Image (cartoon, rainbow, N blue to C red):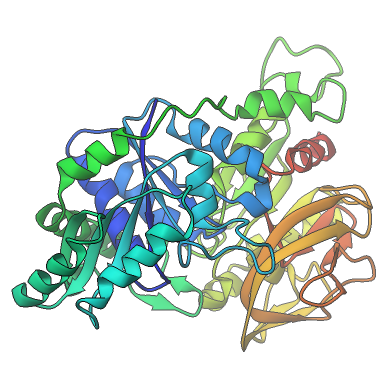
Length: 467
């Protein structure tokens, strides 16, 4: 059984990421194997979690993956660990729009049978904090709020007033944190700046967060609360098993490794799938590479900012999300790689591109030449597009047959014109009915981010096309 805590808050901006990351780093610094998790679809916070723990940050998204996979995915990520820390999303009871509690931190806490620590921004209140905590603790009897961490406390006198008020609430104070500029993480148009873009500064910030938590929190009390979680009784999600179950072609999962001298005559070598990384393409779920590998692929990474060629023998390409708009000049200047991507697409090789990948495949981004695979132009916009999406495949592609449904999310401040190709990728029902994205030869490009753990057949189908 893995001890576990969910770090939640009444609303966004209370300090969940700072506290959760600080706790992860502080417990890891004490010699515990800490498993980091994030409720919801966010890619950026898990990067800081990974920095704090030395393990992949993993998402627990009940909308994209389904409620039945939350505990198995948790067990997969936490296997062999002493403690798991789960950072919540938005306010404790906030979830998918018009879907009740679906995808909320509260729902995930219940699915994990995990106690919740409520992080409260106390900067503008004193005695009212008790009413706030009481309301959150009593709203859903199935959610167990085991303690409060008071953040942004001004003075010793302020702390005294807060503790006195909470003394009658029945919810213990497990930490008091003062304002500390050293723990702050810079933000921009889509949230925090990713670790990959500020590695040294991020290391310093995480270390400062750990020091702040150690100085202001009851570490033994928090650990005892985590260890009070009951047994979960969930079988871990196993990508190798899932990959075999969803293999769509004969023998794909059993293909020999590249260069195997004992490969049977006529058997194709393991398909090599190149995955974009580096500072411009930081958005990826760990399970994607695991599922590609389980389906029979060899996964290799490359950096479109640095590498002038695709990895040797690339038979398929995955370009996830990130911030190409911040690196448009460098991406455009790397003409050899842009040409290589265009040639791969022209040859009909499978290419799966999401959001940033879509922009990279476009003819231009903010006036700068990109790969030119798609007859479309992209630019920055003042408007934020954000929300979960229920998507239906409009045309057959390397990811899905026509009519297949997948759930995903959009999160961008760019627009692409046209918004869909002659063959669209998805039909969306919310927020308005529309078609979106491009299916062109072996290319599937869209703004919609998907989590393949919820649709593992997508990874299997992609590998089959690569093979």
